[in-house]
Amino acid sequence: MAESQNMEWKQSWRDEYLKWICGFANAQGGKIYIGTKDDGTVVGLKDSKKLLEDIPNKIQNKLGIVADVNLLTESGLEYIEIIVNPWAFPVNYDGEYHYRSGSTKQQLRGNALTNFLMAKTGMKWDAATV
Image (cartoon, rainbow, N blue to C red; front, side, top):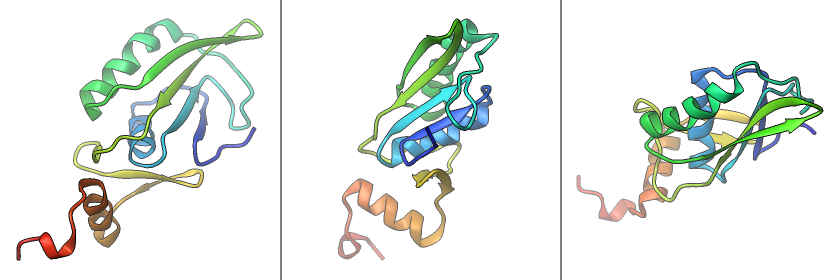
């Protein structure tokens, strides 16, 4: 199965994937599978038990949200599923706002960021102070 708007495959965990989680939270939500190839084939993880504890804490500490982190097994290989729900308020990663579009993560800047923040907060241009 290919990567899509709501699905991302990664062979190993890197903290930079918190940006992908941020992007999913700001868009329609989605799932990240750690321990898989880009086509979804499970390759397994050596440190799955440690990651099962570390990843939820990193998500909470860095993004201020909670995601479901599950340990799965296929053909004797362990891998991790991270389920990210869409959030009603803007989620940022160190002041950066990311958004999942297609099978890519986009950093929002300029007008895209302004429109995103206004839509998430429910503000309208005519209510903004000059």
